[in-house]
Length: 387
Image 1 (cartoon, one colour):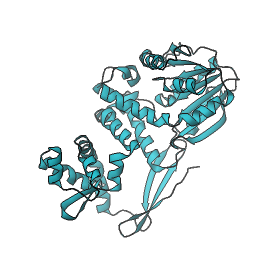
Image 2: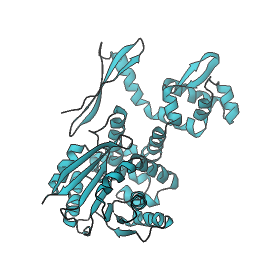
Image 3: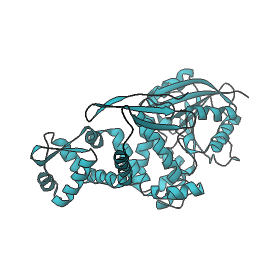
Image 4: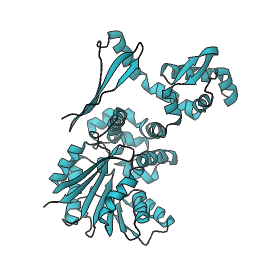
């Protein structure tokens, strides 16, 4: 059954709006309905214009951050005018003017007495909230130019937007070769949605005190390093593509853990390459969402052939049907389009129900589901081999 979250807010003359968040195994969407009336034609047209001009307003906010305008206004809680912004930052008053007018219309700023501007609550989030900063940079640096190729990506089932960065078939092949700024935004986005889940996840994984842990899709090695620091006896093997293995190996060496972490180069899309045996626990953190349903099934079958019935298999994901807040579901649904245009052209953010269906198809059963850990976005699934 769909989950429904309701939230009443004040709008205008205390008009109550109900925000209804509905999800099921295959759909996740927001539906906004006025309790007193449907949107008028003029109101609907205004909402449509927000989409039409959305990219321009987005870039206005990016410019205000990069030019220092948004931080400067944030420091002046009683407001600051265009002339003072321009003189302080050495920017043409015309440029400041068009940006603050755009931000005013977007609800980022409010105009107070003496033609001064101050941040709204939305502006505060854009200026200083870490989640918003990470998402803004990821969209601007990684997704924005590539999004122009969404239609081609859908038609061809290929990440046509990736060509703005390089000639690779998937972003993972070229990740280590991306320009530093883009790579930084990519990794900050990836880590933000996993690192804060690590504390709870480590407690879950080491409850059974595994001696050997396989970190599949180990990326930069952050999880493997965290495991070694959490448990002094565990031996870890990172399995990933050669480019990621090179990055992980350097990070492991820098931490002085090279004797406790081993490395295994593997392309898990090649069904002929088999995961080795020997793991007491297998860990996959925000890894399976990088693949299509059929690819996930094949990867889990590869895991299945490698593990014994006594081994524990853990999947950490941000499932779209297991979120407390509408903003989280909204962001995750948009992230699916990043997978469409940039990552690989065929993956998405999945529901927990869908992931469990794929796991069962690969011969696993759910032992425990640990929902909403860390930032309250994540779920850890603990699986066992059944056949």
